[in-house]
Length: 105
Image (cartoon, rainbow, N blue to C red):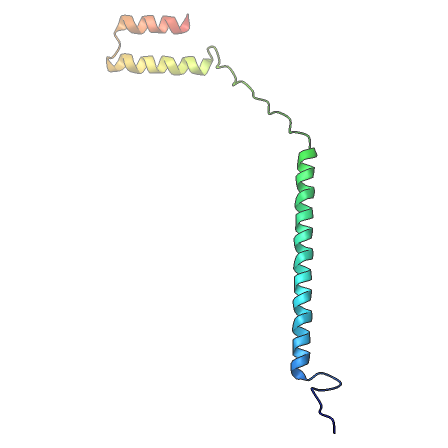
């Protein structure tokens, strides 16, 4: 009777597990390579699109509005400030009259 080496026919449990592990590992490696390639292509396309896009228009800078020359509210506020200074004694009658004439004139 000849000597038999190993099994003939279907593999045993360990053979099936080993084959499944090899197939799964190969599938994972292939999937990862495809994902990396897709991500690299997407990054290259985005970079190319950014390079081809026209530059944004320059922002317009507006000068601030000029202060009113002498508005009614401003003059009234300055007159009331002068009156408070005069009533507190910080301004004399002559100083108050001169400042008032300057504001109104």
